[in-house]
Amino acid sequence: MNYVLLTFRRGDDGSLTCSAPVTALQLNRTLDELVGEGYGIQTVLQGREDDDVDILLKH
Amino acid sequence: MPRIDVSVQTADGVCPASLFTPDDEAGPWPGVIFFMDGLGIRPVMWEMGRRLAEDGYAVLLPDLFYRVGLYPPMIPAQVFSDPASREELMTKFIGSLDRQKKIADAGAFIEFLSSRAEVRGDRFGCTGYCMGGNCSLTAAGAFPGRFAVVASFHGGNLAADKPDSPHHFVRNITGRVYIAGAIEDSSFPDEQKQRLEVALTDAGVEHLIETYPAHHGFAVHDLPAFNESAAERHWTALFKLLEALE
Image 1 (tube, each protein chain N blue to C red):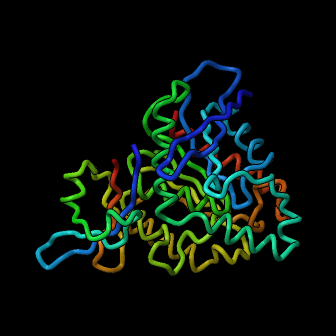
Image 2 (image 1 turned 135 degrees about the vertical axis):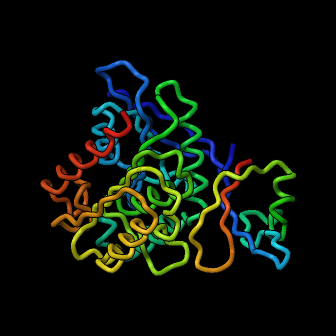
């Protein structure tokens, strides 16, 4: 089980798209896509000062 | 005092670590992650890990610089007196970690402790020194349900004016937090202490922030700023905090 912290940008439709990946494969992927590929949501880290969202995923 | 060399599989490779357990009682024991300071694994870190384990804990001391590869034990007086060595420390070693890596590693350490027969329970303690204090608070913010107690001693940049500073992400912490800062510490000045105090209070986190009458590095005996009375105060505070794990 590995953990990865990714930052997601919120779209006008509410979707979350990865804007700060750890690997190139994660860039511009939506949270739903990543979950569909086996990532699980561990923690939503509240506290960013902008509108982006930091989410800790496990896979 | 049993100490075994272990390997922790992380997302980025294999992290060498030491696992300390008490030798005078039967386990399993509550687990504690010991985040080293910025001078890396060396004898004083092992001594501190042993002392912590003696109080009744299974203590994991990972080499957070594993991405750099093998390196000889650093001698603080030499590193601090040589500009090139100091620069290498800041860039090559401490620079090998960022928030993403600290959190990914912390997850691997939690998984490791959870898998060990020597370890009891699924909520752990964490403590750290200097850079490790930052790692401790960062880990607690990312894994809020997995740490019952969180400590930082002369931790650096806990509430810096940066978007990835740990104080921004304390809202989910459910454990008890103890922060011991130093006087005249440019890495954790009074303005950061006040900022962290506000962040923890607003988040409703049970916490205590203290400033010891000693300088940055007071708890680690091979550092120039080591202060014996402050170091003993640190042990007393840490052992008291960890009682919540038992």
